[in-house]
Image 1: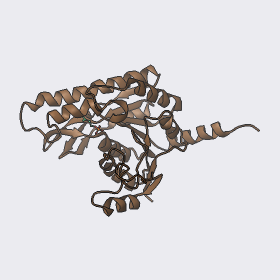
Image 2: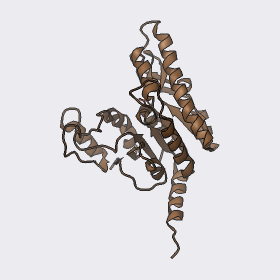
Image 3: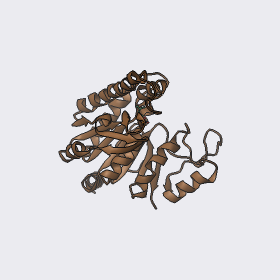
Image 4: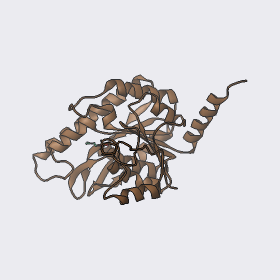
Length: 281
Ligand code: IP8
């Protein structure tokens, strides 16, 4: 019998791209070595670029994190807290520049893999107010998408109407773009397999959560102090909190391990993957 499964999958992917935009976040801990400043995992970047090319998904926006390029400089110069001393100006410039360097490596790889990727610099089209996005000139981004380019954005050092400047996380950006573009789905590529019911560092019986509704997510957050939902590094909660407004708008979020080969490919290809799917209901 003829195998129609490939055609069926292709149909699903085309349907997803036609119906709406996919936002793919690639965590800084995936594409950099967080323990060594300014160290990119170029092989991982190349593998992900190849996976993106192979899916041939149109209507996709990629956002990547800062890892060991953005965070150390941001921390050294207290960029998130705002402008308090002129000596921080060079720190802001440095943080933004390091992000453009990491972004350049991502762009090199995507373009080498024949992906028509175009970088969109967040600090040039976004300003925040007390750390939240207030102004977002998204016309070029919309035009890029319409022309079938792959726009690539990243967490960045941005200007802030109250603080002078601050750090805009890739996660806030993902949520904001997903809502503006009425995205069909958000895929969060991180360096762990997904969310667990309890802290896997503390409880050896921690179980992976394949599916959560928003109500379940909020209940478990409320349950024990700040959270009962952890990832192995414990840093997932802030990420999930940023995504809540998008999930509330009905945009499903899949948290998956982008350090494992083919996981991002399969997710983009609308195949089932290990991870946590968070939906409104
Ligand atoms: O890694 C932060 O983006 P994130 C970017 O997505 C900087 O939180 C400049 C630290």
